[in-house]
Amino acid sequence: MKHIAFNVFISLFVTFGFAQTTKHEFSYASPESKGFSTEKLSLLQQHLENSGSSSMILMIDGDIIFEWGQTDKRHLIHSMRKALLNSLYGIAIENKQIDTSATLKSLNINDISPSLSDNELSATISDLLRSRSGIYHNAAATNDAMLRGRPERDTHQPGEFYYYNNWDFNALGTILEQQTGKSIYQLFYDQIAIPIGMIDYTGTYENIDGESDDETIPDTDGIYQFEKSKSKYPAYHFRMSARDLAIYGQLYLNHGNWNGKQIIPKEWIDVSTKPYSIYNPKYGNAYGMLWNVRVPDENTKRNSFFHTGVGIHMLGVYPDSKLVLVHRVDTEKEINYNQGDFYKMIGLVFGARK
Image 1 (spheres, rainbow, N blue to C red):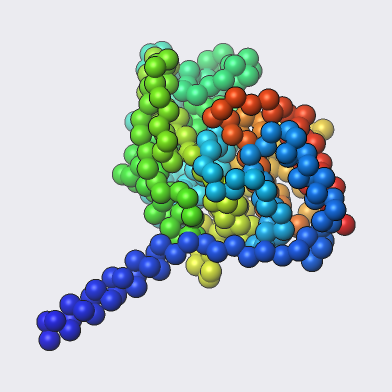
Image 2 (image 1 turned 120 degrees about the horizontal axis):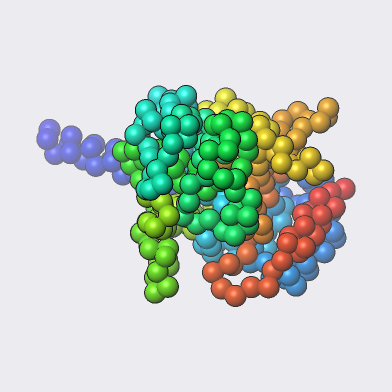
């Protein structure tokens, strides 16, 4: 009897393990069947080859209509890391591990000298999610463009002014880990990568000293970049393949549902992809919560949203077109790719529709 019970246990364990580690299998469709032109997509391919892109995927309603380059190669995703954090926040809020009205003071979140003022400590998680904290403290992984636009400390109340701010994003990573008791990378592996069948992401991670010239960037899926002379909070970098990003985008296109299971709350996706801060009215771009959002018009049924990395990587989700777009460049080597090529790529994608 014990022998039979043991065999049943092993059988259940193997079955459960297989179910949890099944990799996603992509389906393919002709461009014409989805309203795109093969001939025009060939112009896109030529542009990608000439401009120095690494890979690209276009999916319509879950079917790949265009796949080019090394879609299985893992690259740093840069600022697209915020879009990955979005899903983990949605799940933690649903699980009541995070209250978005909680202030930094109540969460015991402060920083190195000059520490946060009483005004800054009154910022809430909601303010940070919308990048409207009013906290202009030094932060890890802040580039020159961010520094040029950064206001002086205590010039704005929390919630009143939008500034794309790595302090907010880095602190959000620490708050998530503090409230859940787990690493961002383990959370993402358990709550997202495994349930939706990511192929290349395994959740490995290491720390680096971002202020050392001798530091070697590890070939891991996750990298905590510390710059301790600036802030106690590290930037949390991800390395991910184009095909895994496409699967992630499809999860959002599906309103958080995957094969009948609600992975990310639908309500969270809707709330976090509203345009809270219009930063480019000419082109209709705004910021939501950890996503850039296209400002809707009278014909919009569901908002489109995207995130870029160093202005050339992109994950875009366009629900009304049932489109997921992923564009990658290998920024871990010398490149000549420029933003002009990036904008031309976007034009060729949408120009390929019939």
